[in-house]
Image (tube, rainbow, N blue to C red; front, top):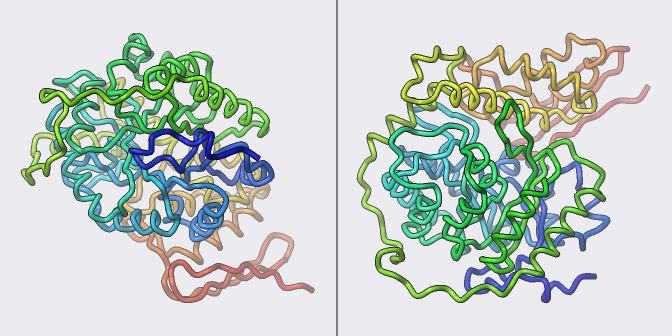
Length: 470
């Protein structure tokens, strides 16, 4: 067994002493391996929205919290939205943190909605003081719903750039941490991707960040597609990213490091090897430097940001959200002054993200991974994005389409039945909503077998699948 006291983070001032040095995102594909080798990590991270969408995932997170510290990681709070955050979502995140006794919670410096359009994925902000002020206002609102634990803010990957950006990337994040009082969750993979795609030196870009405010690090693999590097979370961590991690740790000292892996899972031994490298780099890092004396020009106590509107940023975000979610690709002239190639690339990423979000809701169909993924891509491309619970709406469409394929029909019928037990819809606008009333329904599978799905009262009630014998 590991001596967790010797491997814990020295950031007691930031409240992270109980987290540890190395963690991984908890995913069903690696759950059995992790549970059989609990000392491979010191903590795990769960995606908050997965716990909101699936009662089973939430119960699993609560069980896992008895083994490791669990860090809830939000992806849909939209701290960068000029129109503000969804306070109900913030309250749900706070409730999850309390339920898991979370030592820390994290979210992104990004926006996922604008002008009434739900983008569905993290979109980086323009690097401006106005955007940093919006983040500070939204963080202040979110804090009122969160427990008294550190809120870490993660830097986003850039797939499109905004004209008229007044700040360099690192300076923008310095503004964010100064105005919010939050420390950074530094995503090394995103720093590397942003630098490579801009033709810059990753080490120079990392040094421009406020590294004295880094409290946790994310690391992940990526790949180049058509000359653009994507932080995919589905490839091994490349050597240059580990080298960048070592360079950053030389300046931050040992801080908790989390390995992100969301797809194309290799044998667990490969992930364990990456975790070992991260642990060795953290242990060999020099002690964390003493914080510099505050400088009036660069360090100020976070203050309550005025509740003034940001109409210019709101208009930009609404336009970007519209361009990224329009059913048909906009012509190049319609997207300027944005770069048409950036918009096209971002739209393609969003389409792929919709597939990635929907497939985990179809566990039986996912056993036919390649065929299901191809079918899912066609379904997503042919249908507009639902305004709410998009992943569920997409999963229902995919399952319905799969029922027409004899190879996929048995699994599709079961997956769709289970989704219908938990959700109502789709409505005229394509949206679905949680099913609060009881549900009971029978389906006949190819070959004549009959299955029943039964759910009690409440949206979080357990769904039971029954297959009568004889």
